[in-house]
Image: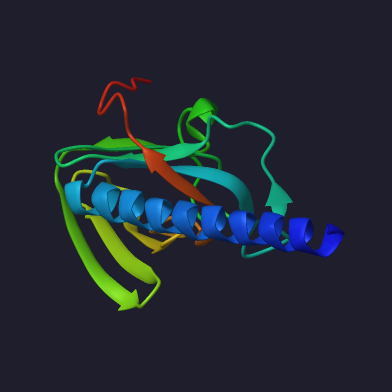
Length: 163
C-alpha cells in the first residue's frame, strides 16, 4: 500500500513539474517576443576576482520596446574614473538602441543590445534559458567587461524607473 501511495505522489509531482516548466517556457517566450522583461541580477563575476553574490534585489536591467534602463553594480578595473563618484555602477537609460534576438538552441535565446545614446556601454549580451534563468555580459569602453547571473521576470511597470 505504501508503494502505491508513494508512486502516485511521485507521478503527481512529476506531472506538476512538467506543467510548471511548460508554463515557464511559454511565459519566457512571451516576455522575449514582446520585449517586456526585467533581468534581475543575483550574482556578479568581474574579470578580476571571483563570483560575488549580490545582497540586494534592486540590481536589474529593464527592457521594453522603447527603453532600456540599467541599474547594475560594477566591480573591476576602470580605465578612466567618473567625474561623480556616485556614478560608479552601470547606470543608464537608453531610448536609442539596437536590439537583436536569435534562438541559440532548443532551450535558450541570445539577445544583443547596443545602446546608441550611452557613451560608456558598447554592448549588452543576454542569454536567456527557457526556465527564466539568464546571464548578462556587459562590454564597456572605459572598463573591463563584467558578467551577471540571474533571471528574467515580467516588467509590470514598463519604463517607470527613474534615477
